[in-house]
Image (tube, rainbow, N blue to C red):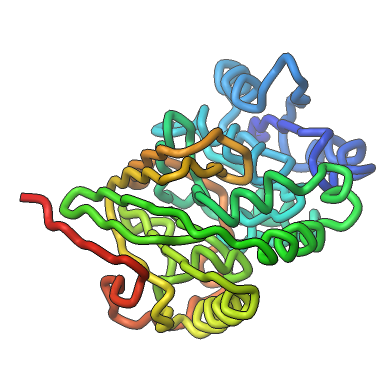
Length: 326
């Protein structure tokens, strides 16, 4: 039987790469005809993926965090002859978790070998490829202000420490959200535009479910002015996400759109798939079923809870104004 040609793209600076990187090629060579590429300051993960495609790899494996995976995916959008494989070695590994890919390397490798190619949506966010989500405000500030050495030492706990500091000095900002059919004005501390996100990414969890293959983006708008209110809001979002229910608190809004433009006053930090991406404005457009990814077989994938039939909710957000577009 002919071996499948695969390329392994490794980010040695990923949060939990460690000694795992050194053993990966030998483990994968048991299953694939393997080429190995290592990212560097001079060679991005996307450039490595493009080289792998030119050399005929049908499976391009991203070994790293969400930023590395998104970068590799950017070179595979629309490709009919190449599939993205994922080995989660980052701090949060939210893309892998959202797709049901195991956090342990042996489990993730098993998906590469025995999983099935699955078409999912992607998005273009201010010129960058987005697989997971874009964040404006609190989430972006938290990730951007967490030192790399703390992420490598503490993992996701490092974000919690930074997040608690940010919650002590919440500063709501004015936001305008323009979709294909309306303009929305309100005040918020965080706006998230998600293609998919695991429940622990609480600021994305306004809708009852986040589907990576429904041809739309899901927005969550959160407003809070005190630490107590922010913590209560986060716990509510986590609970409703686990239960597959829509958020109900007045200070949470959500809606779906195919394209969205977000402007703020004052400008706010932007995060795209875990990487800092300047400041607002932010424009995100859905790219339906633009990416093929190796995911667990459907009968093995974790079943999502049944979702409530709710299109959106904005009522209750502070200083809310909604203007339909003619």
